[in-house]
Length: 182
Length: 166
Image 1: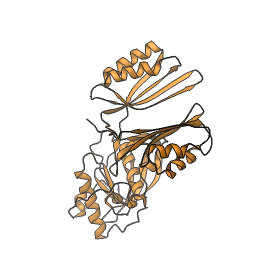
Image 2: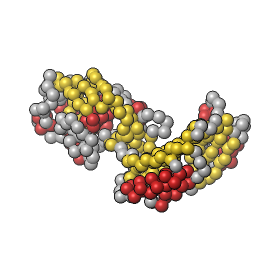
Image 3: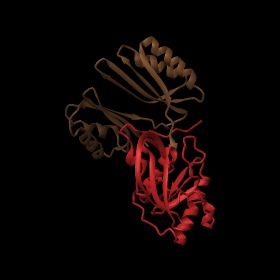
Image 4: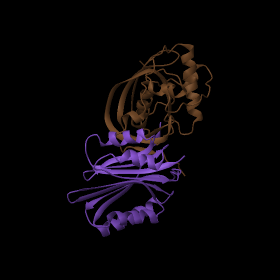
C-alpha cells in the first residue's frame, strides 16, 4: 500500500491527448464503468489522456473516463489550486477506486463539466478512505483525505459507477441554472 | 418555437400531477421548465411548454375537475443567468410587506431574483431567495438588508451560494 506521495502523472511514460468531453444525456455517463487491468497499455494511455484533458479545461479539478466516452473505472483528480482544499495529494489517477470509509457528511453545491448548465446541492462525506490501484504499476493505494479533495473523489467515483450529481441532489428545489460568472 | 405558459391550481390530491401532465402530453405539449409545489394546501403548477397550440392545451385541460387553469402563448426568452449567486434568508414574525420591502432593497442593488419561496407556519414567516448580484454589490446590500430587517423586526442573512465544478 502507498499513499501517492511519490506518484506523478509523468510516471505514466506516455503523452496524454486532449479528448472531447461528453455531456448528458449520454448513455456512457449513466452506465456503471467496468473494472480495468491497470497495467493494460490502453489504460495507461487513458490515464495520461484524462490528466491532459483535465489540465486544458479551466477550473477542472477532476475528470472520469466516462466523461471522455470510455465506460471504465478510471479517473484523474487535481485540487491543488482550489481554496477549499485541506489535505492534498496533488495530481493523480486512480483505477477501480472504492470508498471504504465515509463520514462528516456536509452539503455543498456542485457542478460538472458533463452537465454544463446546472448545479445542485449534494451531501458528501467530508472525510473518506479510498482504496484503489495506480495505472501503470497496479500498486494498491490506501488514500485518506478530507474537505474538497474528498468531495472531488466522491464525484469522480460516482462517474465511474454511472452516477451524476443529479442522482444525489438534496431535494426537488436543489437544482439550479448554472450562473455565468461576470 | 411557440411557447406556452401554463398555470394549474387546485386542491392537493394524489394523482394531480399525473393527470395534468398526461393531458399535456396527450395534447402534444412538451414540458420544458416547470415548478410544481404545494402552497397552503393548494397544489400549484407553473409550466413552460412547447409544441402545442394554446387552444388544444385548454381543451385537453378542460375535463380536469376542481382545478383552475390558464394557458397563454409567450415569447421565448433567454435565461440570461448572470452575476454572482447569493442566498437571502429572512425569518421572523409575520407582518404585511416583508417580501415587498426585502425585494425592493435587492432590486435597488441591481440584484436579480431567480427563485423565491415563502412559508408561513403559525406566527413564523420565512423567505428564502436566490439572487444574482452584480460583482462587488454584496457588502453594501448586506448593510441595507440589515437596516430593512431591523425596521421590519425580522432576521436576515445574505450569503454566497457558490458552486464548485468538479
